Image 1 (spheres, rainbow, N blue to C red):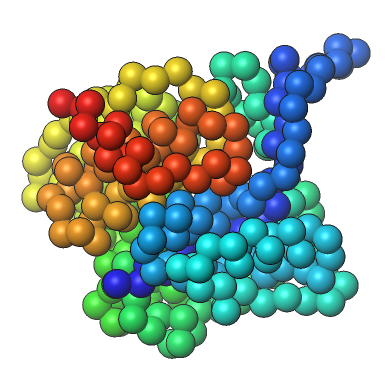
Image 2: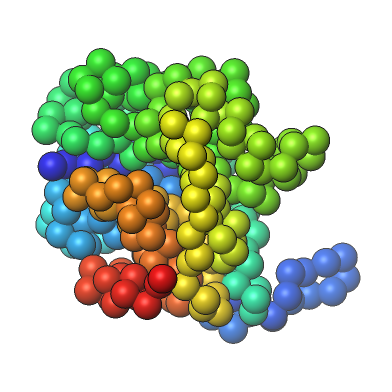
Length: 297
């Protein structure tokens, strides 16, 4: 029942600010720390913390101090298989500064993205895999190859942030998660549900539309629609909330739950994560996700 999380892996530098700095107006920092980041790594760590056999691959690491920090933290989760994460001498481990303001919103500074290396997907990487959890936080070609290899093996593909009906990944997707805010920014001519319907038709897949604490909408491959209200909680840090939503969703899908129930798992997990500073500094147990889920209608 291994889950393969393929994509972004980096070291996040969490910085809590009273506001974002502007020209000639500084911001003050109340807290900072390092934790593992990147969409694939975020999802994988929460899944492994719940005891699910999880494999992480995608971005490579360097033989530098940030790479050592990432490896040490990943090795602390026994259910997590990191054999396919390569290390290169003289290569700088990807890093990202996460600037978080008191309302829980975040801005990012990505370090040297043009240098990022990735380990190509391989047959060994897919051994015993029952679900591919794929992110779009980087170039498409190797992610497309991973999805193609999953489809060849009959493995369902869960992915986020595909917004173009003609995107080459769309025909390979089983479940797609998009953000209503991103959809509005990229496709102002359509509302997010209309875009979801277009993506569903083009890809013959289920599409889930998240909305930063508002109702989550499901546009199923059979054309039916449903909405789910996430828990009403005040966010401390929303960094990685979508990644942990996908962790809960993946957990529900692997349990064989109906899509709407799996989405509730995602909503509970994502909402719970927002109660902590840093996406992976605090990994909540599955029992806490279940307790929050029990409060949902």
